[in-house]
Image (cartoon, rainbow, N blue to C red; front, side, top):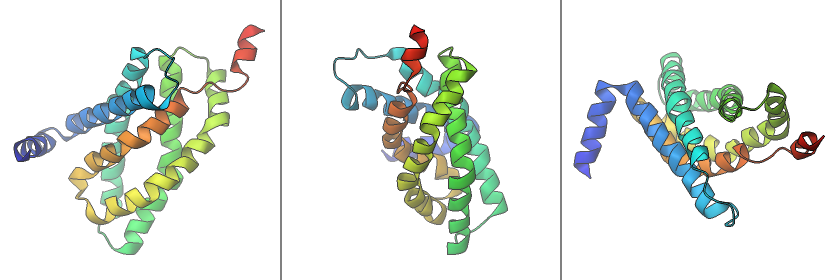
Length: 186
């Protein structure tokens, strides 16, 4: 196990953006696999393309934007004093969290070939749930993150927790918006 950890850290040092993107690919893929196999209705067939969409979101957007956002946050608010940690958590949850939700739902919308109206309906129906649902997980998780986790390891720590959180995101991201079926029938 120590050899794997050493290899991961070597990759993180040599290619931080790629390593974080691949870490997020793994976290989002596993989260969707868990959601489809253990949370959702068992009579639904497994949707491979859904897993591809979630995994690619992790790789292309979550890992890359997380690398830059948390790097920026650490550069502007260095240290682990309680007031610094609380400020980082507040910024993460009041600014980054809603932006992340908009990106997440937008990416899925585009990858599924849906309309802009579908996107706005999804945002109206589920963004508030996503943001508020994240507070239960990410306020305590980021308090630990910003206080104790070295900056280079932040995205790995986040993705470890993100696997479980992605079960919720996968479910929410793939939930039909009420009234969407009715509009299709008209």
